[in-house]
Image 1 (cartoon, rainbow, N blue to C red):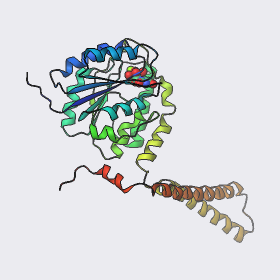
Image 2 (spheres, rainbow, N blue to C red):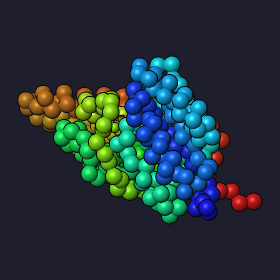
Image 3 (tube, helix red, strand yellow):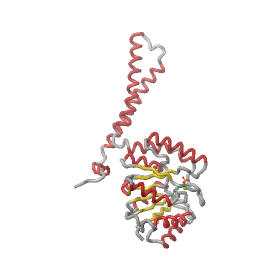
Image 4 (tube, protein in one colour):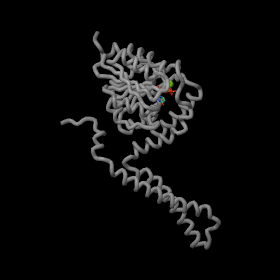
Length: 316
Ligand code: UDP
Ligand code: MG
């Protein structure tokens, strides 16, 4: 039978205590992939599980060593680290990520491929009809709304585990901590074209969810980190200096006004709070501008070769 797809595909799956789910997931993926291409690999990262995940991965490998790759973490390092390891190991031209818990439906893979072929560098799934608890669904909606407003990346579901990347995009990401939630923001700030497709989402059958709604508490600090590292990485003086200059400007006007009052009316006329605010704004302003300048000294170490990561194609 003629296979429709010629590019190699890698499917990266982080798994933390997902022993019961993995065999079903691999069966489903095999069923979807076999008519598409034989050139695919399923990379399972056992993220320090305490159940039988590792044994399960070994069994799956022994059954189908052509398609299964296993990575074993010594300890639970988190989803971002699992993605990183998977992306380093991936041989495919197109790289997928999927959750191991059967909530993502592998039948969506061809839809992702079609969208990538349309010219998108990263296609993110959108759990339009999400099958999780009410609290989780609501807090996730709020998280997505704020992230979309702040980052101006127009997606409904930033943190969806089901995504397809051109290999270049996945390999360019620098993931650690919980930063996997902001992959679309990072990729967009690197100039990649981001798309979205609605995906079928299923209830978890086996095992427990590893993340509660609490995850969103630190989420916004992470968003600031991402914005800082991607958008302002090379111009910290603009970021800090911008806020600093506004503070300094207001502080200066207030101080001028107070000086004027003192000189021409003989007293500051009970404007003590304003006086203090003026001084504070000047001090904060100067501090922020200095911080920006120190940041510039670090940014100056940025290597010229890194500019190459921005180039799409060189024609010679
Ligand atoms: N996961 C992981 N390391 C962790 C936590 C989660 O590799 O420390 C994996 C987990 O096994 C699953 C995916 O990340 O494949 C998503 O986790 P989960 O289903 O618990 O999140 P939810 O769907 O509830 O957001
Ligand atoms: Mg899940």
